[in-house]
Length: 437
Ligand code: SAJ
Image (cartoon, rainbow, N blue to C red; front, side):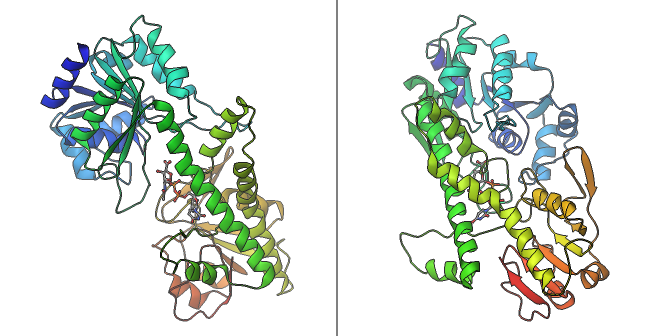
């Protein structure tokens, strides 16, 4: 049986592992598999990323620089743009982006192209695991047919499973190695082979489920759960503002309940490449079953409303000083979609900036993790934070609560602060005129 050979290779660590997509999911996974003693080939369409990996130069915050360097030097990890090397691979993980297109429809073109590349070099005894977050059905309705066009049969000649990535960029406690992993294979053998490989690499529990669909759905459920609860926190923030109640104090009080409550916090909107996007993979698939995922769509509307809610609040604050947004000096602290990371994909600060431009505000952006960023085709450079930028601002807008910001200093120098992240919660003395979301 082919899977016996593969299981033996996994147990003896002679299996060659492939990882397609060397981003914030794929590179940490490739490093963990190489650290476990497997020879790993990383595949990426970006030559720059391949060059960086092969030079032992790390570009992902959650990967330890030294680990990458030594794994490359010892030959356990290499990267390539040459997908024909998939022919050498015994087990291959697909870790490519699954964005939405401009019509909010799933774009699984990277999953399809990766599957086609694998199919060109598919050989008996190979395991393929899709890790990218996607709608339930992708593995069996999209990936499997592409692979079986080769004439090889899933469960007999090759093994196919889905195992969602669970990477929380910047999380100092949970990482690829220690976070529990869910695995669902097309057949029982597929599940067994995939689970055996993950158990030989990861420390966290490997939780087996009965099919790829269950694993695909549980991942989307995880992220939809976050999206909707953040939407609830944002709606409560809007209402509490109208009622003159401090939403942050309300949440701190609610979370004293030791059971049945989980704290989520309002913010300037919902960023990242997962939480704002994944639920709409489910919305799209649900239409096939003539079902309308109302809760997901309402949460999306509320979360998408937050950038304009923030700018409206800024307008009202400036108005108290007889200032229009037009011409006002606004200092924006943070463009990353959440604290202590350098990623601004889907960041809510981008629509906030577009609105400030529309109202002709005179704004400056500071983000110690992001030297420059793009909105559409326009490139924006961030500024160094100086005393002048703080003292001369008509309004300091805190949009990302990076640990690198000295909020005590900012609170003592700024005239007016609007804090969308409760970033000043631990600041003893706030001299400025201070307002929170
Ligand atoms: N946010 C809030 N209020 C909250 C929590 C988050 O406004 O209470 C905002 C954040 O500021 C950010 C967005 O939501 O803009 C997403 O935040 P996130 O913490 O979910 O961060 P991601 O998208 O980088 O990572 C998430 C993972 N995070 C957590 O579970 C904490 C996890 O859901 C997934 O493993 C990952 O997406 C993924 O790749 O699916």
